[in-house]
Length: 204
Image (tube, rainbow, N blue to C red; front, top):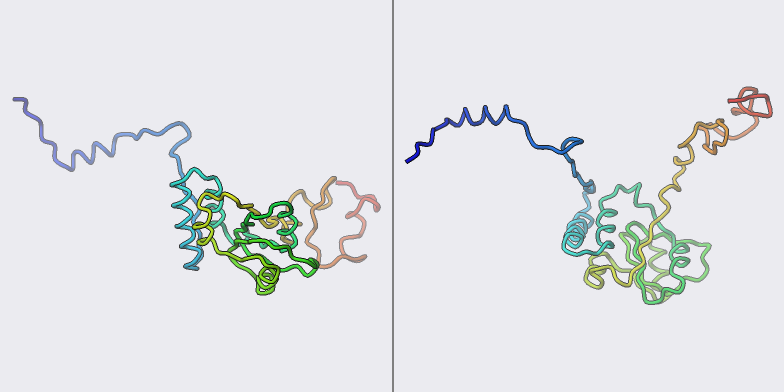
């Protein structure tokens, strides 16, 4: 019989500490997915539901909805009824899906009959959709009705429509820049003197 030497646990741990670990080039892979920070129990349950559907099905729709449910409110901009009606032309029988809020648009005179699934609806938007013979459904109802996202049209609000986005990009005043400067107001007295505009001999 072979005698197996006995190593005390402290010696094993010390040897393990000295040993390296196998990692591929580029270091350890970090796969931390973003998780919703909201305390809304409804959204938290939806995140769990669509995380399950995304994992257990090959549907790209579920993966996209799961990702968007975990986004911050800034990245879930609202979508107006006029945009929904515009994008649902010649798509009868399909469900418009918005991971965000659906708002009313007074400029839209006639609301078409459409089924909309969203996280929230404003009171007037919901009333106008229902009055037109459409329906407003939630994401758990959508998961029962279309677990793979078939017969749906996934829409998204304008992410870059915030006023703050106007000030991002090339510095204002640089050639070919359309970035808006942070000015108190727009007028003759505000950033219009010599040294600020080309008509006064200023060059960057």
